[in-house]
Image (cartoon, rainbow over all chains, first blue to last red; front, top):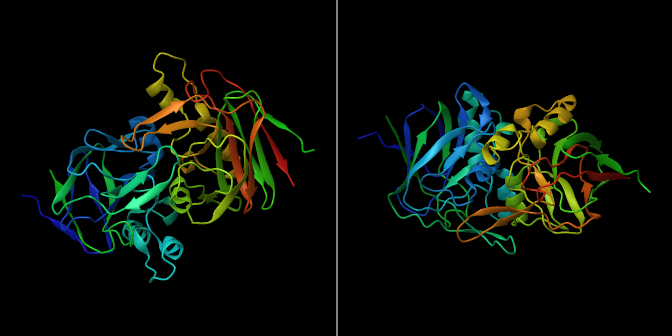
Length: 196
Length: 196
């Protein structure tokens, strides 16, 4: 058994994931979101790209078998297992600015953006180098006709997981999301394992 | 009358657009795509962001009244007029890699990515600093249920235009698209005007 590591509510972490290793991200209590970022370990200017990924995978509903691509058109991660099939790759990490915008009457938090920025700084990633994240378990409905986007509570059940296979040596950023809407109004931890 | 500038087929350009000026992008022959990028003039690490824009505007169908936001949560451009109402902000500029991927039997071109990289280099923008573009007139159907993305010929008619109001001093990158699919299989110019 691989060690299970815990990301406390409203926090984030960063770590190395080597080519061939697997990253298992688990929602221990259900209905929680984890923002995932990936950078090339030896050159963090190569970074996960929603545009390249949507281009090559030809879907916004990424699940088992889909690959997450970099801005240099290289495959970074392949999704090997996916219990929910419901993730988002359109929206950016929540931040001080998004809290002011969406929740003007509630306490402001630095959000996933601030948590990722702090966790990734030791790996040479600047704030401006943080792109749109792959938002694990985030339930974003898109109306194909009107274009409207609606953030809904995640459908993940306690213990649901998603497994990524690393296709290059990576630095990963990962959070337990801090926003009010994306996780159904409560703040919960995220668990993960590095396998291999 | 403002001077009309011409971007020849399969090429690109970059120029300064000051706060308060308007950029008019015209499809002179119809059914052509123009990739648009925007950078803060005095610090090109601040850059147009599809994720922030989709977050704040809450739609993937951006049109008159919508704003295009930066990675620092600042408004860069407001759409003031839009003849077609059909643009894309999901997919990345075509490139050598996308030509190899989507058109393996056809001649390779450096695409909008290569054209933008060359045009933006004098303004201090590196290749890795080129994000997902706002793809003017690009017709990308999204199935909200399955998530499938389909690139279709643009619906723009000859002379259709879109008008942007600059909300900060900007460097703009703009192309006449080079890909086979996005413009219905032919290569045409794009016209633009800077007003004010």
